[in-house]
Length: 207
Image 1 (cartoon, rainbow, N blue to C red):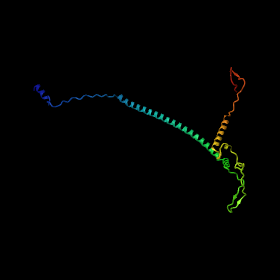
Image 2: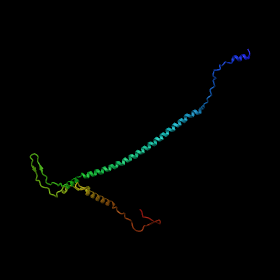
Image 3: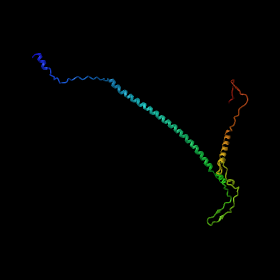
């Protein structure tokens, strides 16, 4: 067998319609080394740790701001509570002063009531009148009997028969008297005479 015959039989026959396959392009990718693969988790853990620390710091700052705001609010409420307590005490003192027996007696006398020095009693069993009734005198008031002690706190308190103008005038006079009493501050005594010298400079002698 000749060489031409051998090549003829070994070469495959292809039809003209058979498509030719083109080789696929080779794709390359970067392969990380072992050191790089070990370094990636460390960076991730560091980022997570820093994020957690930053979140804790922000939460602590917000909590401190909220606590400070609550402390200021509590302080304001306590001051308001103290002011209300003082107002309550002042109003309670005014009520006690107005409800005193001296004030009630003064208002009763201002309305025309008088003290009955000769009381008369009625016995219900037989309807008998015990005692000799006498008409009260015009000058016999409620306080005039001397059974009540005068109350100095009722000095500027108006009676029920006092008009608004008279009450305003009395209140103004009372305020002026209190202001005058508060303004009278004792004048300090100033020493007169030559001031002694201390190391060449004038100064007061101290002990």
